[in-house]
Image (cartoon, rainbow, N blue to C red):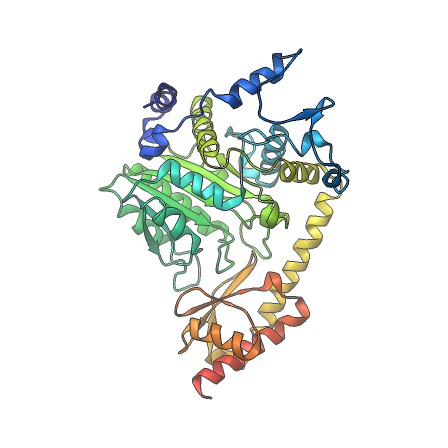
Length: 431
C-alpha cells in the first residue's frame, strides 16, 4: 500500500476507527498522488517566470483556444473554460455550494462539515461512495422503491448486496419500523451502507417531521447496537417540496449524531437547477473532525483522478455564475411553482372515481415523479401497450408499479395522459 494511503488511513483511524472500518479495500488503498497535478498547482503559485508543468497549450498569457468556439462563449473568460478544473472542483464553486447548503438547511447552521467536492453529477457521486465504502458482500439498505441504477452502481460494479424494506406502512407513511428491523438485522455483520433518497425516485415522496425523527432514532439505535453505518443521502431532487413534508435534507441531523454514523450528502445542480446536461454534482462528507474530512477528500480526489481526472470547467463556471446571479432565486421559484402546479393537477385528476378500480396511488408530495400501483395488469405489458396504441411513454418500475414523470408533461396535458393510461388498462382487462 502506498505510504500516502497509509497516512490517510492513520489520520482517520486515530480520530475515529469506526469510520476507518467503514472503508472498502479500495477506499483504504486510495490516495491523491503528488504527481503532475499537485506539482502544477504548486508551480501556479511560485513559477513567476516560466511555468512548464501542466499539459495544456498557452498563447498570449492565456489558454490556447479556437475563436470559432470562443465567439459562442463570449460571456465567459477563456481562463474559466479551457484549462483543467481542479480534481475537487473550482474552489469558488465548492464554497458557494456549501453556503447554499447552510442557507437552505437550518439544521446545518453552526455545524462543521467537509467542503463539497465537485462530481460529474449525481451518478458519479454515488459511484465514488460505492468505491470508497462498498466491498463484495457488503449490505446496502434502501426502500423497496428505488432508482434502478443503484443496482449497477452498488451491486454490479462493487458486489454489494441490496436489502430492502417496505417504504410505506399501512398508513402510507415512511415505514420506520421496517427500516429499523432491516438495520438491526445487520448487527452480526457490524457494517451497513444505508441509502435514502428524498424526494424519492420513483414515488415522489418526502417524509414528514415525525417520520424523519423516527429515521434518525432508528439510525442512532443501530449505531448504539454496534453497527457502523455509512448513510448516503441521495438528494437529487432537493428543494422540490410541494406540501407539508420536511423541507431540508436529513444530512444536518446526522452530523455528530454518533461516532459510528458517517453521513454523506450527494446532490447537484442537475435536477435542482434544471441543467441535466451540464453534469455538475457534489459529494459532501458530514464529518466534524478536520483530519478525517481532509483524508476523505484526498481519497475522493484520488478516485476522481483515476477515473475522470476532473470535471468540466465550463459547466462549473456556468453553475457558479448562476449561483451568484441576482436572478437565481426568483427564476428557481418560478420553475418550482410550475412543477408544483403540475403535481397538484395530477392529484386533482387522480381523484376521478372511475380510476379506482384500475390502480391505487402511492403517496407523493415532491420531486419529479409519482407512481401508480396497478390492479390486475402487468406494468411492462401496459407500458408497451400505451406506447404502441396511444403514443404515451411511461416507466415500468416492477410488475405492479408504473412511474409517471409529471415534470415532463405540461399541466394542460395531464388529464389526457391519465385518461390514456385508464383506457390502456381497460383495453388489457377486456372491459
